[in-house]
Image 1 (cartoon, rainbow, N blue to C red):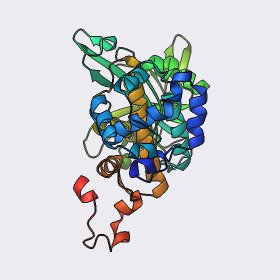
Image 2: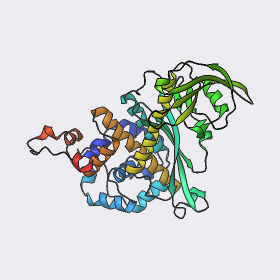
Image 3: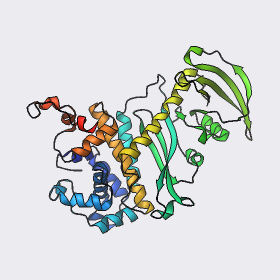
Image 4: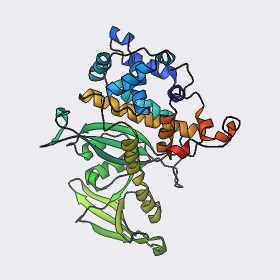
Length: 381
């Protein structure tokens, strides 16, 4: 994507050139895109994300100040109206597909989840992003409040987002979850907001396992008691039967008490082979998706937007997600023991540096240049 070896260019170069060309050809919008195409639009949006600019005017002003350096990134000075028009009218499909392709690259390099079983493990959840109703009238949520909801399928291999769709904040999680196509044999974890016996039956018929919490006041019939090891925190392991319009459904109900908090939980699953303690640990690992929501909200620009139209907001969200995956990909390839937050902070303060990221993280390789062996991480930790 770029020929200059700044840290910004190094980061974007992780996206294969042929991939961008393929997506641009797929989503081309006519002659106007030849001057400021999808690749250039994504580059500007990526700069705004990685440089932590808070508005379109702020980001474009910083780019303009770089002068001739823009040439090395395949850019020219961009008029504010041109950039705004692109964000408001250009199909968001390019950015959604780029996020999906970046996930595929990440997934191939991501470390496996921490459990012994080999099945894919996913978490499913949604988070609401509040918006000012006067600026985003299309995102009406409540009488005086606006918002959108980001539905996310989180891959526990590397803890990366595998699928994201954005709806208005009023949309319930259940219907969105039913549209997902998960790999056969995979295990998906979710909270009580997705509780539906009809969906549980459909998952089982597709060869997909799930773990969730038992809904309050759920009615069931006890079929079997299983032996448990109470030293692990497991208090019960039962086979139960629930009944709905489609008939009886056989499930497994596990009682568990957290040793640290003393809280008691009841987990429901259609997986009968994994140990009860593993089921409890799998649900506990679901909180990684909450950490993902926290990371992306704190470090990337999805609260302040460069445009107010629905299209512009979606483009910015999918760009932010792609940047998140780029940082994860950098982490996987280099084996850096840094969090995404640390990587983001390091890149943010050295964005125009020509030094490779590995040397910035491990300054002992440059003892002559840095005799005091000071790491930039000490300033951004």
